[in-house]
Length: 109
Length: 112
Image 1 (cartoon, chains in turn green, red):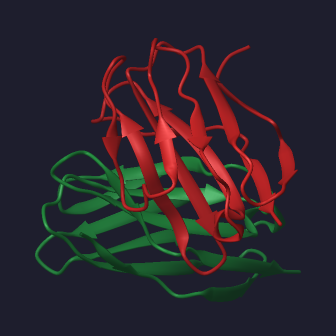
Image 2 (cartoon, rainbow over the protein chains, first blue to last red):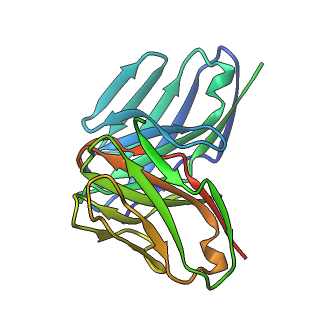
């Protein structure tokens, strides 16, 4: 199985940068995903890392270190609409996803 | 429609009753999944199907069954609902097991 840890909550100011860390222990690794979930809505795909390094997509970037079992999601130029839960998910060798409990980010004016 | 639909949106159910949650996708995705989401626990995989005609057990399969008679539909059945099955249920699909998953809008189920 998988053990995935991420902080429960984070608060940041509009326009700032926030980094959400995710650590994992896996029995097989086949990629790491980040999803965004607004309250009462479905998760939506943000990013995918399978190799070490940084993937940048607009204001969002995701980093992976497989040797350390570590990833982070970086949100830049925060906007009020970025207030949401951010879910770290690890895909195992059987291509099934295991999710962390999620990090609730609150953006304040 | 494009995407995944789930029905019903919400349901209140008496314990012991049988209930089927419906999920339909029109993206011709091969793989489909059922998750439950509980506060503080995140999304947990109940059952999955890599292709029509096949299904597999996820992390929390007890008390649930699925079928995959065709590509588009993946119903989840609770044979005899119990209060611990109160949760938000999400259906998801992906082109293959190797792609990102797209989620339906969810079904909020309360078992009393």
